[in-house]
Image (cartoon, rainbow, N blue to C red; front, side, top):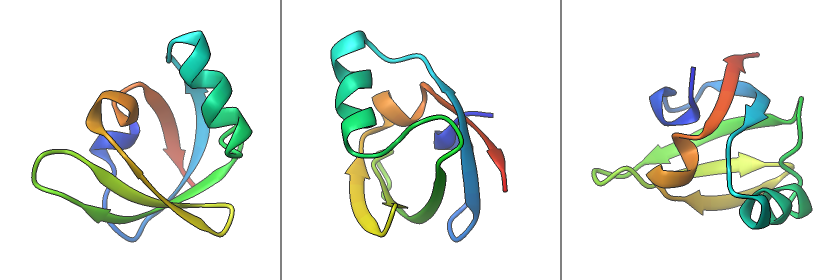
Length: 73
């Protein structure tokens, strides 16, 4: 499943990403690598999500979250 289909409050593990190379490197620099735990904190009506990644909150748009494949932890 992709991250944009996730539910608030649940924890997911990153399986793979299908992002452009530059964006993928940026996400890796922030700590989003294969096997990383992500908790969804908030979903905004237009698709932006706030997530907890390695103790830090990030807001990520639907264009990105729809390309991150996850599974429930």
